[in-house]
Structures are given as C-alpha cells and as structure tokens.
Amino acid sequence: MSTTLIQGGTVVSAIGRREADVLIDGESIAAILAPGHAAAYGITPDVVIDATGKYVVPGGVDAHVHMSLPFGGTVSADDFDTGSRAAAWGGVTTIIDFASQTVGLDVREALAARHVEAAGECHVDYAFHQIIGDVNEESLEAMTYLVENEGITSFKMFMAYPGVFYSDDGKILRAMQNASESGALMMMHAENGIAIDVLVAQSLARGDSDPKYHSYTRPEELESEATHRAIKLARVAGNVPLYIVHMSASEALEEVSRAQHMGLNVFAETCPQYLYLSIEDHLAQPGFEGAKWVCSTPLRSKHEHHQKDLWKGLRMNELAVVSTDHCPFCMKDQKELGIGDFSKIPNGMGGVEHRMEMIYQGVVMGEMTLERWVETCCTTPARMFGLEKKGVLEPGADADVLVWDPNTKTKIGINDKHHMAMDHSSYEGFEVDGKVDTVISRGRVVVANDTYLGAKGHGQFVKRSLNKYIH
Ligand code: URP
Ligand code: ZN
Ligand code: ZN
Image (tube, rainbow, N blue to C red; front, top):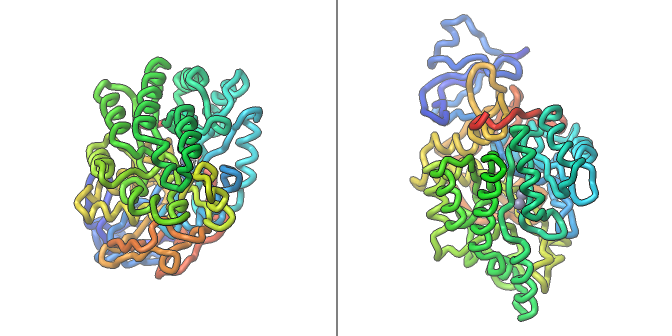
C-alpha cells in the first residue's frame, strides 16, 4: 500500500488549527505528525504533497443531494457519475443521496433499485437516506429492517408536495414512533403543502404565473408552521431525533431554536442558496430566467432578515449542518416545463460543487470561524448521520482530505468553474476567496493542479450507524 505525506499545511478541525503533517497509509489516515517529524520516525512516503500556506481539512460531507431524482415530470440532471464527480471537484468526498419509496412501492425494493443505480458509478463515497412516502405495516417494518441490516439510519418525510411525497400528520407520527424505537433519525421537509397548493391555485387564477410566485405562494409562515408541527409530532413520538432539511426562513429557525432550548432532539440544516440568493436578485429576474432558482423551500426576500439570521444560526449551532440539496435541472427541456405556470417548474437547483467555496466565503466575511466551516460542512454531517470514518482527520479515519488554498480566488460560472450537468450555474458570476487545491478520496488523489484524476467506480457505498449526538 502506498503512503502519502501532506506536509507544511495548517490542519484545521472542528475544534482548532495547528501546523501539522498528515500521513496517509493506503485508504486511511495513519498519523498527524508535528511538522517535519516524518523523517525522524524513519518514514519515507511514496508521495509528498506540499501544503505550505494552505489549510488541510477533512473532505466535505454533503448530507443532502439528489442525483437522477424523478421529480416534476423529469429527472434531475446529474446522475451518480456526473454528480459525484462534481462533488469531488468541490472538495466533497462523501455524499448522502436518497432512496425513494412512494405510494404503492415496497421500501426494500426501492432501496435495492437505488443501489443498482449508484453501484459502480460514483467517484466519491456515498450513502443513502430512505424517503418514506407511504406509511403502512410493511413500510414500518422495513424501516426497522433498514436500520438493523442495511446501514440506512435516517428517513426523510415530506409535509409538502401533496400527491407526490406528502404524508399527513398521522402517517408522520407513526413513522416517527417507529424511528423512536429503532434509534433512527427523522428528516423533515417542513412546509405546509396543503395550504401551499391553495395559494398556488389562487395565484395562477389571478394570472400570477412567473417564477417569483413560487416563493410568494410558499410564505415563511407555512415553513415555520410545518416546522413547529414536526417538532411537536417528534416530541409526542418520544423525542425522536428530528432533522429539519433545507431551512430558509427566520421564523422556522426560531421554532428550532425554541425546541432546542426546551431540550428536544431537534437539528436543522440550511443550504448556501438561502445564505446568498434572493427573490429580488435571482427568482424575480425578468422573463423566465428566475426558473433557475425555483427550489423548495424557496428563496426569500433579501430585504427581510433571513440571511442574517441563518448565518447567526450557523454560528450558534441552531443550524448544525450546511448541505446543498443538490437537485439540478437544466433550463432547456426541464425548467422550461413551467413556462407560463411556475407550479410546473421542477423544484431544485444544483450546488454540490460549490458548498465548500460558498461557506468558506462566510469565514472571509466574518460570519463564522474556519473551525465552524469544517464543523458544519464536514464533521457534524458525518456525526449526525453516523458516518464513523468520515469528517475528521485522525488516525483510523478514511483518508478523505481537502487541501484548501486560501490565497487564490474561485470564479464560479458556466464558463468558469462548473462541472455539474447543468446548462447554467446557480451561482453565476460569484467570485469567492479560496480554492479547492487537492482532493483525496480514501487515499486516492482525485483532484490536483486543476486536473481531474479520479474515476467512476472508486466511490463505495458506506453503511451508517445511528446519529452520534443521541446514541
Ligand atoms: O426544490 C427542492 N428542494 N428539490 C429537491 C427535493 C426536495 O424537496 O428536497
Ligand atoms: Zn425537501
Ligand atoms: Zn432535497
């Protein structure tokens, strides 16, 4: 097995930073050494990576992505091959995607089908959450089976999208009770989909059909109401750990913060789009342009306080994780399905490649520390979802490493840095500080010197244990 020494860099973890060298043996971290000490221990590495002036951090863990998701009358544009490759370009070495059970489907069969889609396709390691869209005796029994046998320890449910993924409160409660017994984590898409559908119909009847009405028909009250309801249901279900996904609104964050102060096991994530993009600058662009940014929960007004509050939530650990909810659709043939009717625009946007960049910019802007960048993008998502060998640089952990150059800038755009299978970039024109320099996935260099060195099939499925905050 070959050894690699990353020397001269500053190793940053969730709790601090220090000058140190990182020794990799095969697929694992072998040691974190005082600078220059490898020779003193008689170590002659096969490969030396010079990280002088750079940060050495754990490879990113993006806990919320959707490759090849059938949704909104089409299928998300990145498959496991292109999407996991773009992840690698973005310094992400583990992705967690979803297996979907919808009405009438068998949970285990849905999971098996998802395994077939991903096997041999991924460039970085991957895991699955299971979407439960049809709660019945069989699916409840399957949930327990997945936790005990398949390394699937988190389940996503939807209070939105009636007729697609939606579950009513009774079904959600039953699934939560099951998770409470098995120790699994419940993930919730918290928006009141029944009320949203009324607002959508009324908006279209008035002739308000442009993309921006996607956000106006999903007001923050309907995100916070659903968040509140999910928290109460989780409490009734025995304080089952609850993780609210893609949080976009201040009021919803307040619900999470209140629950945390009450001692409830409630966690939440936000995504870069909610920290940087807005109705005014993106969703309300003239003509049909805004369709690029139709996602749910929706982008919100920059004149309100959401972005400021979400950054604060990240600093204060009210928001534990930054994920991307990567769910890209091209404008051509996909977003175009909703010309003249915003409700037919497939919901989702791409960003798996840009999370480390966009959140590092938060460090530069003074919104969070370097350590918190590592914590929210690497360490906590690994602990939250039971990825035992991910998210840290310590002996025995997988050798998933990102060497980050803080002295260079990254220009994002369809003709600049862009490796996702999209015909546009959600972050077009952004120029951020810092740059992905070198990416190592289980000991293999996959990105270096602006060159892709990885390969389809290198990424392996990772079985997950229970959430490490509760169990
Ligand atoms: O708009 C979004 N978020 N699309 C992906 C599906 C989901 O709700 O996460
Ligand atoms: Zn969702
Ligand atoms: Zn999602």
